[in-house]
Figure 1: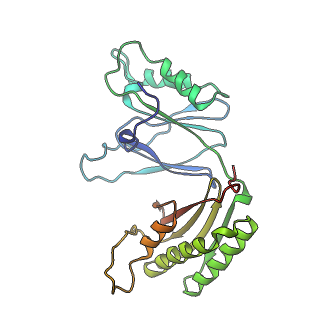
Figure 2 (figure 1 turned 60 degrees about the vertical axis):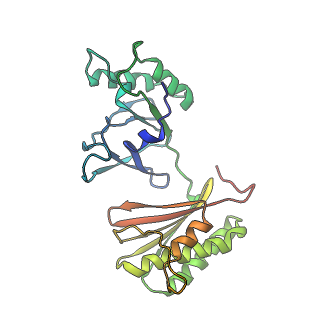
Figure 3 (figure 1 turned 60 degrees about the horizontal axis):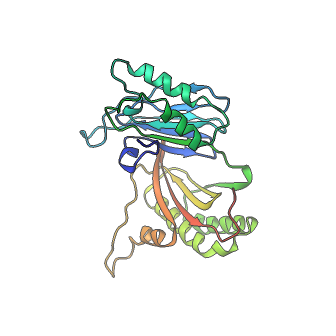
Length: 268
């Protein structure tokens, strides 16, 4: 038995986006019971989430719910096997799990072990896995946000704003890469959208560049031919960034790209 959820199970019930700036977590349920949220004082709740089928069972939409988390809260994701027991209903298993997780002050590894120790001695009828994550927020000095108008000159303005912020964070080594990433992200947002654009830089264990727009569709990497005038933007971002991705918002999407911080510049 493991309490660290394997990759194959992470797709079935996952936090779609945990935002350390707004302290919000957006979750969609896909086949498994709802997560447990353990407050910093030890109280446990199981939020109500719309039920949905597991991934791969029909082409159905997954409805998400956005929750407000307190600093220091623990989010517990688990599979059915952790709470199922012959002769007992799921509510009893969830109460047992919640009781085991109500131990403020424990390290996540110790908390996970304590939860697994409450399982019945007989072998579970299904895979029993548990994933724990502690919510941490970022300080105001670690985030910079700018609204942008919808005109081509804002690409140049965004680069200047980002460069000034990098100077403030003593990250001059990342000027060139960040300018290129921001140019591509904002150009992509200007090409198809009609609403406002927002640029955000986040300095934590990595430097994250985010551009929020009102475009509902996700950008895709294309492999243009040598004479094609465009289509290389995401290829460039993929080359320059540590990793990148896209997530939906109520009004559109956010596309983000991470860069590794220079040695000695990591902010915890």
